Amino acid sequence: MQIRSVRTFAGSSQDLHNAIAVVRASLPADPHSAAPQHSAGPQHSASPHSTAATPPSNEDIHQGRTGHTLDVAWPVGAVQPVRLDVTPCDGPSAGGSSTGTSTSHQSASGNISTVAASIAVGPFIPYFFWFTTPILYWFARRQLRWTMNSLQTVVEGGSAPAPLALPSLVPAGGYTRRQAYHLATVGAIAALCNYGGSLLTQNLDLIGDTFDATDGQLGVSLAVVRGGILISLVAAALADRQGRRRMLLVALLGVGLASLATVAAPNLAVLTACQTITRAFVNVAVAVGAISVVEEAPERGRAASIALFGLATSAGFAASVLMLPLVGSGEKWRLSYLLAAGMLVLVPHFARVLQESRRFEEIRAAPSVKRGLSHLLTKEYRSRLLILAAVAALGNVLAAPAAQFINRYLADDQGFSPLDISVFRVVTAGLSGLFGIILGGRFAERYGRRVVGSVGFAAMSISIAWFYLAEGPALWVASTCATFLAGLVAPAMGAFTSELFPTESRGTSNAVFLGSGVLGSVTGLLVAGTLSDRYDDLGLAIAALAVVPLLMAVLLIPRLPEPAGNQLDDLSPSIIDNVGM
Image (cartoon, rainbow, N blue to C red):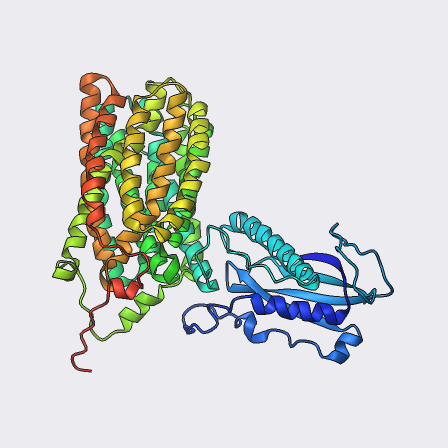
């Protein structure tokens, strides 16, 4: 898709040619133009800098044949050419523009010229085009407006204004096409898996009614579901040997099959067994997906890439919330699991398009690499591993029951209907979560992971406790704050778990964090369910757990090394044994 803008300037073709040259000189060089090309994945044309149009000759200018290109900053591919066609007009004119912008003065000779500028809106980003295309279209319009305004300023004798910065969602320098396509593909797999994994939370109250289960029984069921960590541990660790690509496909297949089995679950025990498998593979998809995203991310955009991956994953959660009004009574909740089973038909497609990360390919080609848990327990990585494992466990003591019991709390304690719950979740968790993730990625790059993680986690714990103790309008405000802060923290904490460990052991380290996180989740769910049954107050039971992650945020996260501003391979170098080489 092309967008076009036309404006009339007071000046000859030569004046416009000179102005274009000045504006071109103000533009930064393509940061990817000198980057090494990797053989893996689809090959794309070289940067537009290598094929930019040759400036027209004086003869071309006098005869009206004046075509130019300006390579402006672009989110994907670093630069995008703006095509400029200059056409001299006959005779003097008061000046004007087809876009409604008038020239401010007439040239001394009375000459006027028309400039037609056009830019392509692209590339097409698979799976998330509904999100990326409007952003690219908006940014293309801004770049055309900047181009025309810059020419206007230079023709009138001023200096070219500063080039536009990339959108907030995009890291400095933008993405290569390979990086963008990889992020979208991994994000789509994680979104599908997360949809299947979010259904238990959304339908917990309906499932409890179907099987006549108490809060305590549901708490035990949810704790058992976390027991699927044994599958997660093995699969995540295998990602260091079998590759990120293979384990992501296995996770997608596993969630689809488990969802299909859940449709026919005759009792809570069978449903719990099916959801144990689902939860295990959702953990694998999110953990291994984040690793793959970080390994393909630009060096100055690892946290931003984790933020975008988090947004993609959240799309699956949003879909499960939107399904709630459609399955609002009886056993219609089984339909949402039937829809989740539909992801099975997409497995062959993703098997064709999903690529392995370049860093893993390089490590796999190495003659001998130290990997595994023993590698992580060496002096260089031991403290990082133990601190992050403790962070995962203590953080989930509150996060797990707060997330799993929220719909039941809203229905039983606050009197919300299924439609009320869906509206509540969309209003309080929609834009607030989006803004939180976007700002979290930017803040983690600018201020560092430790500050954002520590302050954000502490504030989030307080907000969750406030939510479970509040009533009326305060309930909505507290939920909005908690969701925003959860999004703010996610990029920093997600980056920590991948950046601080080497490529050959990232899967194993994340398996450890999954295990410790599940240990914390099981503890929190059992304690919350038991306290709720004993004191008949679910909100107070969950709010009391907030002290655990609050202390963790203050005492543990600041002890981690700061990854922001460092090269990934400098933070966590691979140890390659070259014996025999």
